[in-house]
Image (tube, rainbow, N blue to C red; front, side, top):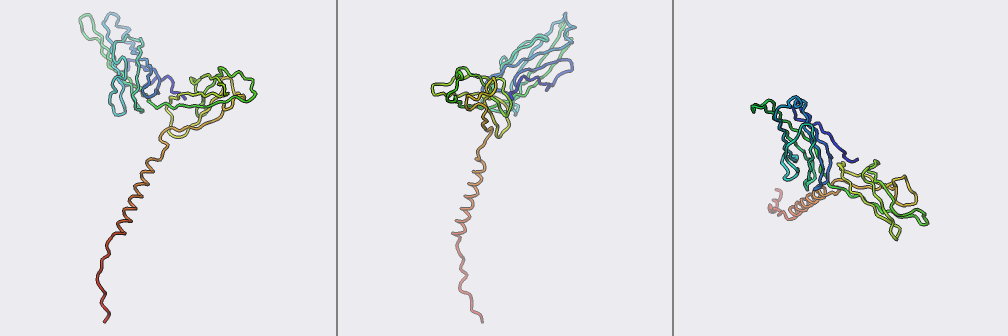
Length: 259
C-alpha cells in the first residue's frame, strides 16, 4: 500500500553517468522526505591524475514547471564520484504531482587547465504530495475477558493489504475501551476504500472491533457541482415563468362582424 523506496529511471542523462534517486514516492503535504542522490561515472576512474569537479543543483517543481521555494535542502553542492549525498524535501501545502529535478555538472581538467571531459546530466523523480487520511477505530474488551488489556499490538489493513509501518499498541482504559489511530499517507484513487484493525499475533476474539471493516472516502464526495447546476436551472425556470406571467397581452380591438 505505502509508496516505498523508488529508484526512478526517468533519465535525461548521458550514456556514461548513472544518476539514481532513492526515496519515497509519496509524502504528506507540508511533510518531509529524505532522498539519496549519486553521480557514478566509470570514465572518471581512469582520470586519477586530473582535477575532477562534480556539482549538483536540485529543485522541486510543480506540474506547471514552477520551482517551489525552499523545498530542497541542500539545493546545491559538490559530490564525489560514486559517493551518495542526502537531500531533504519539504513538501508544499498543496497536494499534487511534483518532480524532483537534480542537475549534475561534471568537469575534468588536466594539469595545464585543459578540459579533458565534460558531462551534464539531469535526473528526475516524480513525487506525489497527498493529504493524509486519519484512520481511527474504537475497540472494546469483552465482558469477562481474561486478556491482559495492556500493550496490545495491532496493524492496520487498507483495501485488504497490511500496512507494514502501521504497527501500534493500545491499552484499554477503565471503561474497557481504547481508540487506535493511524495517519495514512498514500496515493489512493478517488472513491471508497476499506480498512480494518487486526491484532499483530492474529485475530483476537476477546477484543470487539478487531477485524471489522470500515469504509472511508478519498476525494470530493460531495455533490457541490451538481447542486449548483440544479440551482441555476431552477432560477432560470423561475425567471422564465415570471417573464411569461408578466408579459403584456396585446389588444387588437373588437373583430369586425362578418358581412
